[in-house]
Length: 388
Ligand code: CTP
Ligand code: MG
Image (cartoon, rainbow, N blue to C red; front, side, top):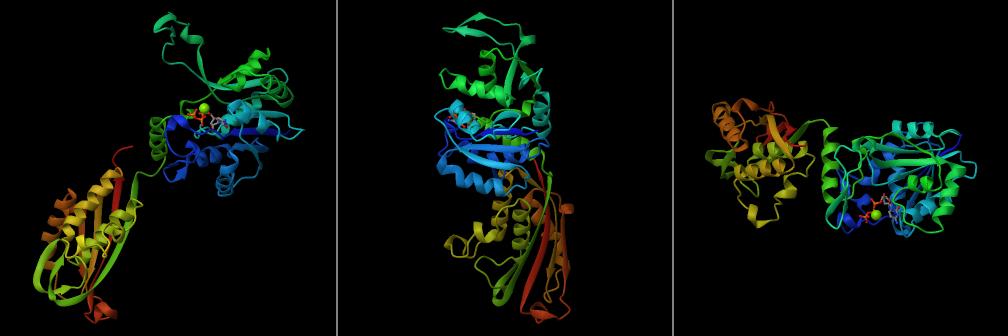
């Protein structure tokens, strides 16, 4: 049994109003088509996949395909003028001995492997064609010149999704029929036109077609829901002593001398905490946001930078859970400052001082810190997703 699937991906995504085919736009770290492919490859019954792309986009599609483990044969066909043209081109590469063929929109990334398998299974000599669809929840109105002219009975109305398909021999007839012209927005309607009975099997709301920027936002929300809501990060920093400078640590000025060398105020503890927070959110480190080549950060108050980091991570949808940290220094003795440091850091991050851990240790005279050449700090942070 050879089960083929034509994945149409050669549109331009004009309603997305982006400069790039919507299928190549990044959502949660991957191009949209990555998710479609990943889910299509989950089908157990699929034997061959024909991906229809614009010729100039084919290399990028190829590299996405090769990044996802798969066991099926993958072929590439050239896009057509419209969706129907792309289906036709894709079909021309389907194996001659293919038994069943489905068409799926590249723009429906959250299709699942089970439904693709159900669609293949539903096709038989008795039930030669299939389409996936969901019941209409809203009442549908037929409107002409701004006026409702008909309210079809809702219980019999469904919204068609993809995959859709038929026995391969029969699909050939649909493709030949298409060649004679006419506008069809899906494959089932061509089969219907030919008098072929098309069985509707249950789809899912999540199989929606990503068409507008709002759809892209919805996709991002749904993908984020599947990810762990907690994220851990770690940070490390070390600064050399410069006795002529004041010592800033944990957002406090500890002394006027015995400080650390650095472009900013060299608050090694706050720097480690900032890196832990940024790292937890999968963001670049503080050097990216506050480069030491930028005059704006010369002598900068690290408390202010920490407040900025809080804003950056909040804009990414995260809030701080808790922080733990260790300062490694032979001098000065820090125990007496720790409660005030916790208060200060908690105040900037708008969390409880109980959610800020600070420990101080010496390096037992070992290494550079042990030789009193500088102070190092390590921090861990947990952040959690506040919004979807
Ligand atoms: N498609 C295709 N070839 C075309 C037009 C569309 O392969 N000439 C594909 C799209 O890539 C998409 C699917 O058909 O996966 C459904 O089409 P649609 O959502 O309309 O996508 P676009 O045509 O790209 O978007 P728009 O209509 O907004 O331009
Ligand atoms: Mg279109």
